[in-house]
Length: 303
Image (cartoon, rainbow, N blue to C red):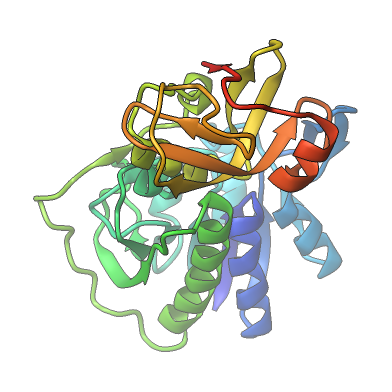
């Protein structure tokens, strides 16, 4: 097929790599433009753009697809289909209608659950036991299109957003190749029941409130690892990211160290901190952290 691919982050790059390996003709790649990133604010190309350029594929990064010139340029590609994965721009109706077979989206949830921007984090925060990938025919709604393919993936008790992201990226890449390997499956409308929305993650949601139950905080830590990282303040005011924690059998005052091994009391139960990162430092296991800084029982941690 003549394919236009539209995506930006690593999640999308996995799908693009699979389509290239499957032998599809990628006539153009659309991605978000290079932007400053990291501590040095160096201008960086997106993972999708880097992959496209390494395969000598033409890359476009319009600021919007709503103007007539961009829509004309898109139509001139004469694509059979457009594949969209975490692209970052809204596709207006003229763009959606241009490819012969329409536009398909690789969405990281079992639609209609978790429509929207942050389905991976929301699934972990909610304590879902499974999630998955849905390949859907795009329409003008927010992830409301009919479904062509859907496959579930269990969310393991230790899975964080990073490991779940990688597993879903691999699954999405496999499913989109499967969908395009034969005549497209019949599209099935999404159920009207069970709709939830995965709102964009706000910075405030990463802040730990030790008065909450340990199980809820464990999900919060997993949902925000590795980025942005759930965080709290130590007794000396230093900001501390907590990237991994385990439920502990102890109990005590919320936000207080219950021993000298970084077991912290919660509103219900306790958490043993396993992987931590102080501002400006690398992430390190608790054992290494404690070699450089003693945290005796009674030490306070605050939101």
